[in-house]
Image 1 (cartoon, rainbow, N blue to C red):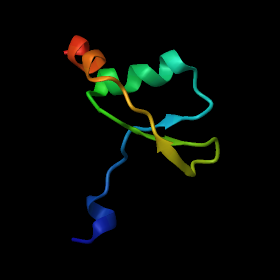
Image 2: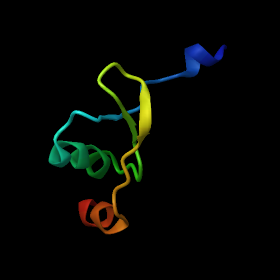
Image 3: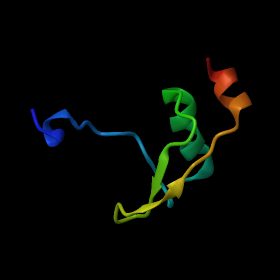
Length: 58
């Protein structure tokens, strides 16, 4: 089995998203810092969610 066969999509946020929408993904998916991409899909950084927000979502 090759790496592309094992790869699966990973949730990310877009730099153009509203902050509220961007914060919803990590809290719903329980991701501490999902990657952020620009509008063409190039990596931009990560969207850090405070630990207390993730705790409240559990």
